[in-house]
Amino acid sequence: MSGSYIVGKGLDRTYGEGEGATVALRGVDLEVARGELVALVGPSGSGKSTLLHLLGGMDFADSGSLEVGGHELKRLDDAEAARYRRERVGFVFQFFNLVPTLTALDNVALPARLRGLSVTDARARAARLLEEVGLDQRSRDFPDTFSGGQQQRVAIARALVNEPELLLADEPTGALDRGTGAEIMSLLLELVQEHGTTLIVATHDEAVVDVAARVIHIEDGRVMRDERLGASRS
Image (tube, rainbow, N blue to C red; front, side, top):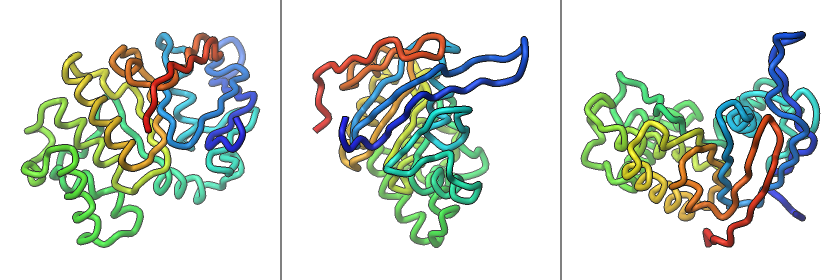
């Protein structure tokens, strides 16, 4: 795939040593085009989350190479890796990870503040995103007053506030009922299309697979199958 946004070659990752070692990834090759929506599927412990962690610069492979946007991630020093995570990547988690003592507005604005935006600019950007996810009337409310689906909408807005090139979602519908999960995936797809973001989702959820243009099956740390389903995000 010429000109790929993500290029991973021979990625290995093992945790621990000796008899207690756990091999998470075994020689994984991966190429993803800019703006692509990819679902990573496989049983628990198959290596999906580990691969997301490598892509997000939260962890690094023991061997192999991984380039995102032409930058080899393992060559980043600590400050560069932190900047990469802060400015180029957005994260959506299964259990939302909202700060309970902050309003929805300030939860969304937080990554922009950490990036260096003023309070006024960060809140203005957060307010626009809360409107996009349909929660502009709840901006001053705290997370414990929201349903699970509403909390995930706030989390998605937060993930997009720094206008990332890459959005990584780890079981984003796992804590939601099927109907709410389908709504969240529809919203997520709409937003990444609008923002031109590359989206990679680790999931067990068929609702996610149904909207993905590409599904990569991972088992025992290996890519077993890479399916292009003919769907289009354009």
